[in-house]
Length: 72
Image (cartoon, rainbow, N blue to C red; front, side, top):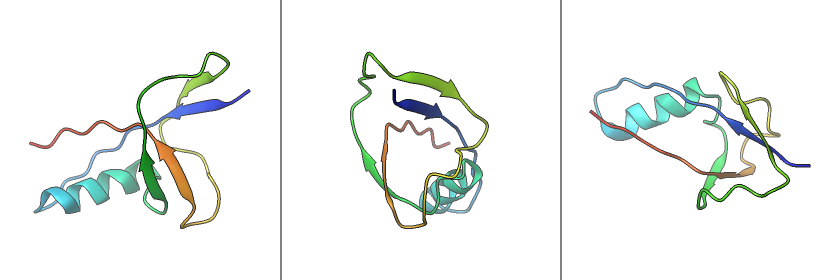
């Protein structure tokens, strides 16, 4: 069974890109190469909400994500 972790982060900075990077760090997702996919959840997946993403392997690994962003 696959587990899908739902984590969120908040970032505040002078530019949209810097705030995005800060939000990724807040969610513990800043050390990965993110690959965005659609939001289809496989039937056998368990969805778990977490405050921060758990350790998902060595820095630089590919991480498949579905992401949403709000910039104000």
